[in-house]
Length: 535
Ligand code: GLN
Image 1 (tube, rainbow, N blue to C red):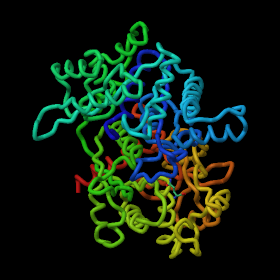
Image 2 (cartoon, helix red, strand yellow):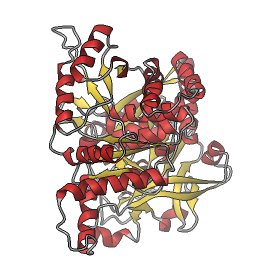
Image 3 (cartoon, rainbow, N blue to C red):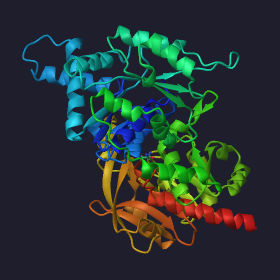
Image 4 (cartoon, rainbow, N blue to C red):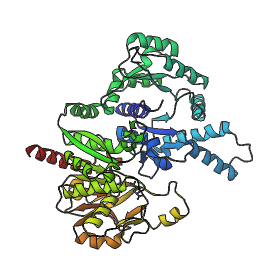
């Protein structure tokens, strides 16, 4: 079922094989009709991750990048919609030479072609393919069919790993293997027998249960990998290796076991485990509500980037969700922001919660609270500055108020037609673009280089018509896309840390190489924490 860590399992297998000296890539299959993840609401589907080459994809691709420490290209993500689209387009171009085009074999065949393409592009020794959804459901059946066909084509080159959940009902207090037994039955019905089972549970799996599962599921005992909840997702590769997953995989592929090199990784996880000092970071957002649950998934890369930066700075971040809308009704609510060492306003769309975010940003600016604005967080910081420092009372983004007399954030020229004609899928300014840093700014000091490349996902931009006036009042333009003269980073003068980026730095942060802006933000938060203790 979803949420048990298939993505982290896939990414961890990747890290393990990479640590054995192989070239590894990973592919995510989402069994949705959506062509990509760009049109999905984060509350329903989690964060939309963006690759360097501009694919809007599932958050798990972010896990692959973080664990493999490699950029994943657009070929490594597919949905049901995208697969059907290619087949239908080929049919319209007479690409099937007059044949009757059928769900089977043509849809699974297209899936296989895409997997082969991804594998070839990465020159990978191993391509790990994560099929989303739950075994036995209708949606992913054609992908399982593709997997089965692929196994038939490459009998020694394909292995199946089932990630399954073993509940421990509180009234019984005992780990139950029955759902996994049924999952394997359901898999068998699709013609697939798992080679390895990753047994996800609250606690580690004991020997009697491993034995039982082995017999009932037709999997050898040593191929059942116990995967108890981990304190940090980055501990998972090491946990898997406790059960010798790397050796088992290589043996099954008929490869000699190679020496593993998880040293750098484990040095990092061991160091993190010892950290004690805490900083409190608030994320002001709106994609939280799903019944009674608070969904951290909507901002997954932001959370990971905060952790990477904080850990590098030697502290543990305590991340608190702040619902933007509460600051709209109640202006006193803002005072609680004083209890935080740093505030982040992440990416977002539309009008809900916007005035609350602006209220918080004003508070951070005037009270010297470290502030990091990501995409919408940068745009709203510009609006706040225009309204309250420059006196442009109705300053806004045309995304929310088309009639504002001060559109300090305005539609990117190429987006005007897209919006008017509702061409809204995959049409934002997406992926990597260069940004030149302005010397002597906080950002230039943090990055320690003159040019960077960062990932984007937006339709609106800083309006250069207002740049002079804003700069005169103390807004600092710290990063520019030179080709298009787009403002990419803003700061403000005389503030301990106030940075807004048009791009999404969180998408490029990795555990072993934290993003410089998140690291600088963490250091500013530590400084505030120390100062507040002295007070
Ligand atoms: N809604 C804004 C835009 O489209 C910001 C997008 C974002 O935060 N990713 O420009």
